[in-house]
Length: 300
Image (cartoon, rainbow, N blue to C red):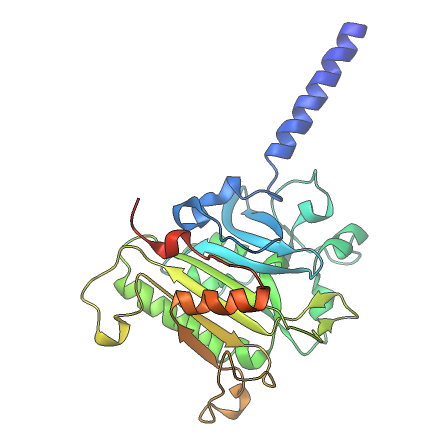
């Protein structure tokens, strides 16, 4: 009897150890292919999530539990095919239960478990708010239906004003599509994140979900067509942008163009070199933030 009990304890301990090592929350190890040179961005602190959908890793997210939003999402770009998928919004079960299956799940109809509500943003947070659900990793930067559908998880979403989401920021995503699809010759790595307010940060639903002041994005394409038009000479191997998410923000980071259509005015996007983006991130986060390994260098 004692022998069987000891064996059972060993099996349980081994199983628990394997489950902990195989977890998709807390470690980027299972999804390092989402990052250039398998090197996640440095300088930001949060909970790593390897976003798994239908038993396959799709992209990576650094999640802020206190904010209930991501700091950034990182993914491999693929020339898109097909339309925006019609799919249910999803959540990350391992944020609610560490021992849960790693696959993201669709929100259930009706009652939602309180552990899920307390651990992450939920659909109710965005209903009747003035903010849309803004993808950091957009569905239109992916080829397969399943990859596009996997981006519809609230662990990949921040509160984004429609003037940004449907205007200049969408135009940026479309422009990146065109540029990378035409001139990038190999894998392209994209990281998209947020910049918080310095003070008086707005929240959804009584301090439930934090609203970012800016959204930023940067890509790394180490192998590209050297026959670039003059306007794109500085856009490779890497480039970046910051977009306004508050039309009343000051203009030190992103100026406002008075030529922009009225419904999009104040939600401008400023394109810039990667070094300039990292300068603004350092200033706001008060620490050095490195987005890509050796700034997307091709050296070994």
